[in-house]
Length: 179
Image (cartoon, rainbow, N blue to C red; front, side, top):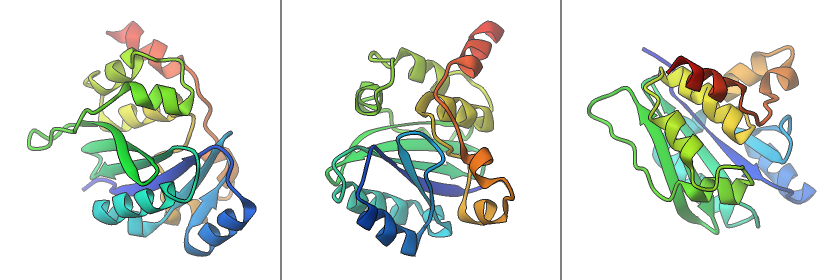
């Protein structure tokens, strides 16, 4: 059995008061530029994750990203803004689960990524790579740590170093070179 986890990532600046309020509920990281990440074991429940992401996206002016991984067999990312699910995508190794692919170009537009036509994002999701590799590619695409949960973070000695991710194309270029 693999890893199941979820997390929430707020893009852009939010007030210190909101950060403090969220820190009372969740394990928070500001290790990645322009991101405030929320980790909780409660986010293993995808319904709770979606509801909480929608609620938080109503409290901030920028976009919010929800990430969910099920049993290392499927991963999804969903963009929320003003309480609404605006875009969604994912990859799955399970025949019985086909992720929704909705409004992919919005990810690049809302998060300031140079991929307006979502060609790179589609390539990552359709690459046929193992889900853990797809997650690493998505971390590089968004520039935020997706594959972590509250228990892991609290156990880390070098927490900020582990959680720090930067946008780039190194893994993507390697993937292209292999195919």
